[in-house]
Amino acid sequence: MGRGGAVAGFALLVAATQIGWLTFSPVTTRVALELGVGVGAVGTFAALFPIVYIVVAIPAGRWLDRRLETALGVGAALTAVPLVLRLLAPSTYAWLFAMQVLLALGQPFVINGIPAAAARLVPERARPAAIAVASAAMFLGMILALVLGPHLFAAGGMVGLEALGAAAGLVGAAVTMASLAWTRPAAEEGSGRQAAGTAGGWAEEWRAIGLVFRDRAVWILAGLLAVGIGIFDALSTWLEPLLAAYGRGEAAGALLGATIAAGVVGSAALPGWVASGRRQKGFLVVATAFTAAALAMLAASQSVYWMAAWLLVDGFLLLAGFPILLDLVRRYVGLARQGTAVGVMMLTSHAAGLVVIFLVQLLLPYPAAAFLLMTAAALVGLGLALRLPPVAEAAPAAEAQPFSPG
Image 1 (cartoon, rainbow, N blue to C red):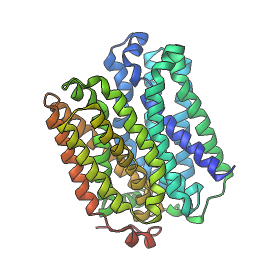
Image 2 (cartoon, one colour):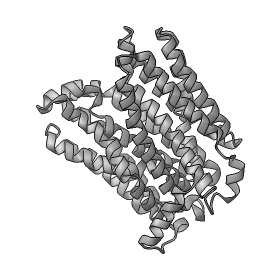
Image 3 (cartoon, rainbow, N blue to C red):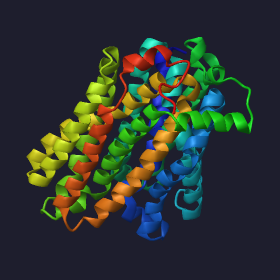
Image 4 (cartoon, one colour):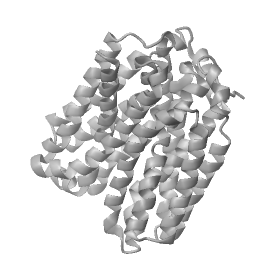
């Protein structure tokens, strides 16, 4: 199996995690009627994922560092098996809830494993591109679930709605596990198992986690990711009621879809160019500054075309920051601790996302203030981006030691 096919299979697995997460979100009311439960009960299917992620993020990351192939295999199985098993009782709430719990447990292994999988499957020069492809697939999975969900439900009911995730998960998991079994590591340091070693015990595990927690660069990256995901989650959750206050609520779905679509393009196109010239810090400064400006402009005017112009460019830049941050993890902390570092980043970002969602909810009666709150969050991200150490300083030692412990 070629390395391109291996990356494509893993990218499909990543997309499947997002399809599984958001399967029921675009048709929540209709699914609630089908299952005979309240709308809030169906909303719980999606709400499980960030909560479980916070709990599982660091253990999953550490397992990826210690036993990459095994951990990715577990993530693949916890994605594909529940997606397929949902079809056995597609209209039974308790069964679907149990499958969503398993899916939520699998997601941290797959998402945290994006940079590690790239390091395992492709040579050094191709890793930024592989991370970009997997990250773009994550956003594409969101779009597929949100856009196709209503049409699949109308055509095939619950079975039709759940079939997309089952197909993506089954094929993505099969190709990923076959790739891990049949392809040689791209380089000796590409295997998480080899990089991390096998000696240890609890004391060694806590020491390795402690090194990550004491690394200044990890916390800067975590803060940047927290700002980006917090803003994205808040917009995804509350853009419709915020715009409804201005009489523009009907435009929210199209604006969000276009923003994510622009993010797919940016995530696929920009990271390779950014990495080739070590432009990561400059890009993140520009992306956070533009995000702050865009949110301020949404507070200033709610013309649909005005908002669309700002959000399209911001989606292109802001969502492209995700694969760039994942690539920076390896460059700063090295292969042996990158899974743990991504776990810290994802835990922080999901927790921050919940905080931003709650704060924006409090300001829903004052939409301009809500947009300005998100503007302030973006300015915090700008300050963090300005504090990033230059990549040139971290790159020579990236495979051996963290950039800045202590």
